[in-house]
Image: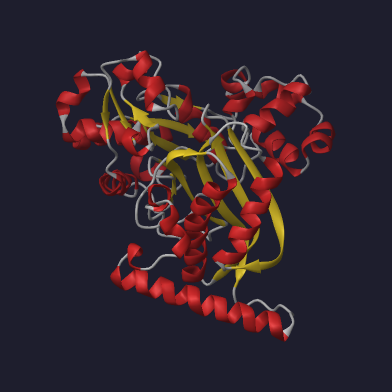
Length: 413
């Protein structure tokens, strides 16, 4: 069996580079892409190399960024343009393989195993792709080349910007063994903390750990990252155009003002849950697990989740569960800045379930009402129909989670 050749391409500070491509003079100033501070969507989404020298960090507030760099130029995001140009760049990738799997807008894996006879080694293909993207778009990308997806992604993260790192079966222990364990895919802050408790700080230490200890402390995730650290990832790069089945649906918002109590949180959760429910109905799915995320004004992020007694696509049920979770886990000792809602454990809305006739009739009426709202919004716009409660504080509720591309960094847990 021939060894696989997998590339992972990452557009360096993607949003900022696209803005620089459109306006080249931006390359000469400290610039970042961020939300509108006056509407409190004031978070850094991407920064250019000059801004990076001021220690501007993705995810921090504009207020914090301006303290570090008072003359920072902040550009509001143009999401549709980012989608357009990143797809154009991926079209270049698709000239080298029919297996190109997107990972967000700015990243993609390319399986070049069968392309080597035509285009040369993985390193040669990576170098050629880097050169073409730079010449045709004026944009740099970092590329990792390896024998699996995990190490290819790790390679693309190792040298920024415009790095090209090759990780082989012969050199991977010397290349990545001393890297922090959190550099490995799937190791977020919570997993990192648990590994540190086991005195595991590097990928090499993780690879040499007893797998039974990892399974005991971390469950299935412990076994997964153990095999990742030892180069045993065998997942395939999806065929171009393949639609990956959604595992969750989520919407979130950075509020236009501080969220000071449960009543204000409920207003925002109502808008977010309506959007999630509408998306689920469009997919013909229902969710069995609801998660909420909330960020405090000092930018600490928390998530909580619960399994539902019955899967649902109704916003009314989601709102009630979201409020129970928040009330149980947060006392508003500090105001909240952001909220999000996610539904996972998805199943078809045709799946069999048994319930009382009274419950079914009640749910049918609620579903008919919510579908009617979907149709009105689809034809006449989101703001043509709203719950009366949304009028209690228009500043908090005047946003359309589905129609407006509200972008802010998420958190891996």
